[in-house]
Structures are given as C-alpha cells and as structure tokens.
Amino acid sequence: MPLLERLLMGPGPSNVYPEVMAAAVEPVLGHLDPIFLGVLDETMARLREVFATTNPLTFPISGTGSAGMEAALVNSISPGQVVVVAINGLFGMRMAEVASRHGAEVIAVEFPWGKPVNPEALVSAHPSPAIIAVVHAETSTGVVNDLTWLGANKGDALLLVDSVTSLAGMPLLIDDWGIDLSYSGTQKCLGVPPGLSPFTASPRALERFVDRPSSWYLDLSLVAAYVSGDATGTRSYHHTAPSTQVVGLHAGLGAILEEGLEAGFARHEETGRALQAGLEDMGLDLLVDAPHRLAQLTTVMIPDGVDDLTTRTSLRERYSIEIGGGVGPLAGKVWRIGCMGHSARMANVLTLLAALEETIAR
Ligand SMILES: *Cc1c(COP(=O)(O)O)cnc(C)c1O
Image 1 (tube, rainbow, N blue to C red):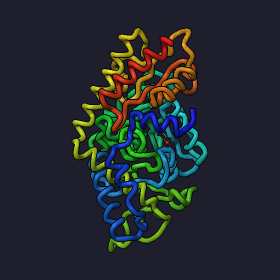
Image 2 (cartoon, rainbow, N blue to C red):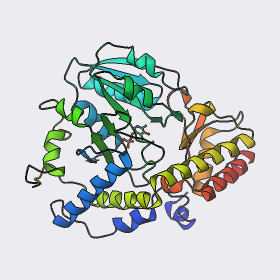
Image 3 (cartoon, rainbow, N blue to C red):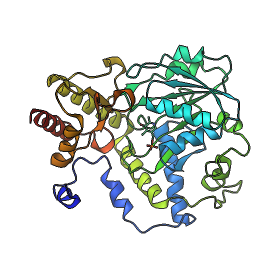
C-alpha cells in the first residue's frame, strides 16, 4: 500500500506521547547551549525518578537499547572476567553475545523460551562472577523475570538488568532491589521514538569501571565529563548529544510523571490483561503461563490455518495497527502484541481485538 494512502487513513495507535511530538518540532538546540544543558539536567532527574534511584550517573545514552546493553558490559568487564547471563529469549542471547565479543567468559544459564528464569540457578552457576545479567521483561517471549530475590542474593557480583521493556511500564526499583547497572530504551513503555537508551549505574558499579574500555564512544568515564561535568560542573564535549531526541525524552518523561508512575503501571496492567482476556475469549491460546506473563507484551499462538504474514500485513494496511511476529524458535508460531506507553489504552485494545477477529475470519 502506498505510504500516502496509509497516512490518509490516520496514524493508527501511536505509542508516542503527544507531548513528545510537540517538543520534537521545536528548534534544534546546541548540545552545549545552557538551555539544552538545563533540559538535560532535568531529563536526568526525571530518569532517576522513573528508575527509582539516587544514582548520580543516570542519563540517556546516545543510541538504542542495544547501545545501553553494550555500554553496561563494556565498561564493567575486563577480558577473562566471568559474566553469568540468564537466557530465556532473544535479548538474553544478545547480552551473552555482546559480553563474549568484549572478552568476557560467559556462563549462559538457559531456560526454555516462554518460561521464567530460575534465579537460584543463576547464583549457583559460578562462585564469583563479575556480573550476573538478566532481562527483566523478555520482549521476545512475553515473560517477566523476578529480580527481587536476585538482588538480595547476588553476593559480590554486579547485578545487570535489561529494563528496556519494563521501565515505566511496571515497578522497577533500582536501589531497593540492589540493581547495579540497568539500561532501557525510549521506544517501549516510555512512549518516545527510538534512539536513546536511559541508563543508570550504582556507585558500586562505577568503582569497578575498567580503564580504557574497548569502546571509545561508549566509554562512560569520558561520557560522564559531558553529562555530569567536572568537579565544577563544567561540561565538555565528548560526542554531540542528540539534542532533539533528549528534548523528546524530557517531554515523554514529563507526561509519564504527570500521570504518575503508579497510575501508568496500573494502565499498562489493565489494558494488557484486557487484551489477554479478549484473545482468550476469541479462543486463542497464550504462550506464557499467567503468573509469569507480561502485561506490556503478549505472545499469542497463531491459530492453525491462519497465515502469519498475511494477517500482520492486513492489520497494518487496513487498520494501521502493527503487531510483531515471533522471533527465534517462536518465529511463525506466535504474534507479539505490544501494549506499551501511550498506546496502552482501552480504545486501542478493543480496536485490535475487533480488527484481529475480523482479519482472521477473512
Ligand atoms: C527492544 C529491546 C532491546 C533492544 O533495544 P533496541 O532499541 O532495539 O536496540 C533490548 N532488550 C529488550 C528486552 C528489548 O525489548
């Protein structure tokens, strides 16, 4: 379908807060402009609220969620150090791959896709790892991994948590749960376009940062000279901050905090569960058992006789709704339906359910 024709149908459910779109058309600010630095300061303060942390080094990395993942690992491991990685989906696999490329000795602790991680198996995988890494909300399967026990039992290891899909969508308490390093992404429950990776590191993690990590761009000691400044607070150039994206994130965080974090969590929960109930009412099966099921990302089994790609294409072209296909071993077997950020609204859930039912029946 030609792009113009689709645009004329209307935008479909957007996961971007309208405040973000309004901010994104403002004039571009220079990355050392005092006005922009004020926005950056406030963005960092807002991120601390959303991450529930007092960590001074809490800021948006210039890059997507994967850049945050790489930054967390590359600054914290020297070649040969042991990283225990929980793998129950694509993003756990990616952490293991990134850690191994930077020379870590990776101990992968694997669980079936669609099942949660057993935290005790992670802790017993090695007596003294440098890092234990786990994905909070596995977007490839729709599973939530419990973090609270791990934080209390991590021992001397740093706990690294991928919060790309959980941040602002469900409770995540960096300080209370003993999480040392975490990265997120703007395009999931933060409801902001892709391109930044909100990041936080505890003082304990900072003390262990390696000298001259194998990435210059993601060397957080260098980046800190810009985002935190020197002893006098003076900021100096490291790389040009993507100022318009930061302004957009600032606006999105403003919308999130104005709604209230708890109210936002409740909205994700209510809409995600309504979606799941509606899918089950249609006779469809969900991949993940109820206690471990995310509200923010639902994996539903593709019914027999229904074509995966035709259905998704039809939803996009006829209703401007995009749902995801399965990945890895779930490719062609499930659809992944996000209910995140600004798009987590009952009107969108009801439209999707009706559209899916109509599309399957065609
Ligand atoms: C989307 C996602 C990522 C990767 O983020 P990008 O922005 O695509 O680089 C990592 N982890 C999880 C859990 C995700 O959902």
